[in-house]
Length: 347
Image (cartoon, rainbow, N blue to C red; front, side):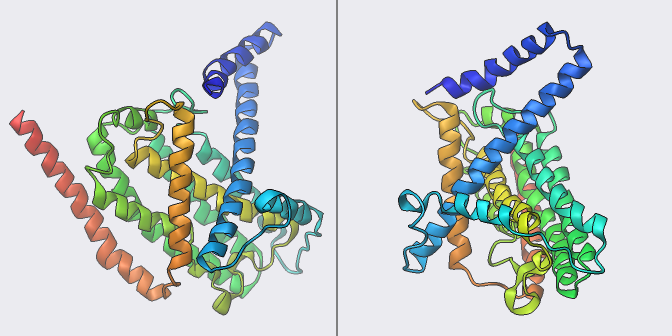
């Protein structure tokens, strides 16, 4: 069961030793290791997309009292793989009058950004592709770039529905990033670090969900908005703007957007588990298995909310954020600071 721990902790060192033995200098070795990490993370992303998509389809079928995919593979497990092959075989049509460079680069950028987010997650003890001291800051900065890429897709498509979808994304993501950051700030104050691995280690005795329940509620609501999941999926409201910024995309370019959406779901759930539920901490089982179990439970919870809640109106959604969610998140940070000062004074 601990073989994955050995692969992460010892495998990378062995590969580096082999590259040095073959005569590569330090700079080339670092570059090749970065390529290997990128490929490994891309493989993890692809596997999770296939499995999460199956959970989403079967879960939606359960909530809507129907079966869901059940034809391809046992329990429909291979349906997502079948759809991926179908999308690869479809023609990627480029409409007239689009900004070709922006139009073509947007799906590549959005998927690359997602893979970059996977790199900092602690999948287990000493099992991070990249362990940096500013992990939360890195996560926030990289995830913010996705809104720019989506606006690129909307603008480059030269379609009014795509542009409206992109503009809604900018308004929504930037607005909800404020309470999202405040929800993480309380955890940073308790742990005293921005390093995700150290935050997990600090929860060895007590999970931060017990200290920060309000921050967790703010985090979940903000995460739904960041992921564009119902009730915050206004940027692709079919009744109003067809498919939003997806409207003019087809084939593999559409598949990259689709994959990034579900890959981000795993990243956001993994971050929530890391911050509030002890990450890979747990008895008996290997650390990576604890992380995966907790993360997929969080994913199921997010998908449950998605299929249970109706779509909100865009103006109501923004009012809720600015008039309620942001003040609550700021008050939580203030109370956390006051509580820490009281504890320091008592000690």
